[in-house]
Image (cartoon, rainbow, N blue to C red; front, side):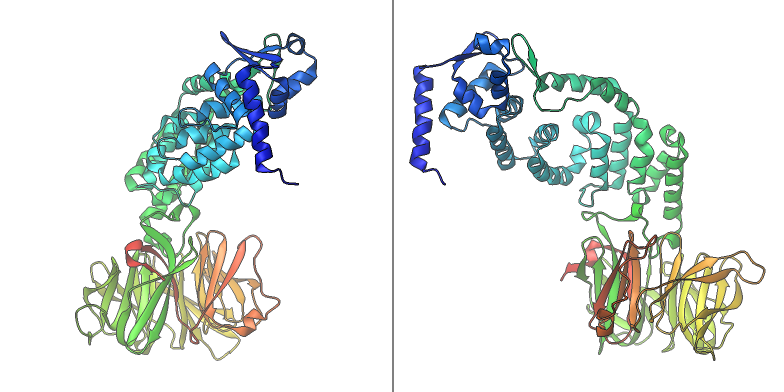
Length: 597
């Protein structure tokens, strides 16, 4: 049954009149030299603390008087005004003290009012103070709105004394792991972590002393504890004294592969890093990732994933060819959104290849910008949202394959049995080797230092494979792969190269030490049972994204795998409107190239 507004107002007015006239007051609260005459009924009705006190039979109940500590007389007077009149007494200057006192006295509706006031008045000048008290009292609603502001102002927040002295390791981890952390450089995160780890325990102990006195209430003769959990100061200091032990965990959750070389070199010689093998290995792996372009082509370990606020995104490019025009779009794995790239005009076949953060087009093509169609084969690069012509002229036959290996583009020309190596930066083009087999090439990929060429054989149930050792400039093989390589795709993670056939068979390429061969193919799983025309696949975090043409058979496949234990936590099937094979090329793209669809 709802209470009528006029009835409620009349009851409040009655209490207000009692307060002003000081009639029937039956309890006294002492705070310092101040005395507050109150009504036990109202105190018990609004404050769980006073209700417990009055029911306890303690001496204060007999004396009808209690002394409160750690609450100022000004704050308690504001609270009484709220209890007796219903007026809002909160301001930016009083909300923190009233909030603390409301928790100590366990006045739940006033706690809610303080939380609401904090949400309405949140700004860059008070968010740290609101975060501190919301964290202390586990105010989830306030924490939910303060946290995005911390992320948005991370550059300045990471430099605050609060971050250095009062953030515990779980919150530091939560902060540096967040995809929405807005920073100028990942270097800033590392410098903040080192400062946090090196923060002296004595500074944090002093900080605890500043707040510890506010977390208890004492009556005149006995002590009553509120329900607020109190931290053990000795334990806190001990934990802070061991902050160094958290450095490996913090570094493992930092985007160390995106650090500047200067920052990585600093870390490699830092005494705290060198104290543990785990921290040293993290920095060594990151240096290796930075120095070897091949490790950055189409594979992103967790420490190489760009944040949502960064200048780059981890994406894959899909391509659709029309008459005289090629449409390109990119799928952002972090935001799960498609984004548009500049179109490319072309009169013939164009092949695309990605190296690190660079995306190239090879063929008889031009941009949709000022100059006319190019009649000879050119190399174009997508830079800052514009296709720009490189000073390289090459002649490509209608049928050719391209593959990025380290910093080079390898061009396979089956008709002439040639393999060319192109340096897109310098424009140097050399004939690297000749193809050893004359079969129809169905797929090319690479694994470690090997370039694998899959070709059609007379046995329809097998594909032949020759592989080129780039470290020795020699061909090896052939070896066989069960099943056809027609329409097959390949993808990588930090440790492995995978092959996926159109019938759903998944293979892993493995290096072996044998006099007869250097690689072998290990069958891993069958992901679906129909035949599906594929564009490509990419591993992002622990998820596998498979992109192919629209397929009703795939949708109806009840045995389709949605995960693969120990490898992929989730398999995401993505379908395009295309009816012929296309591409799905992983690439780190500059945001300047993108427009959201």
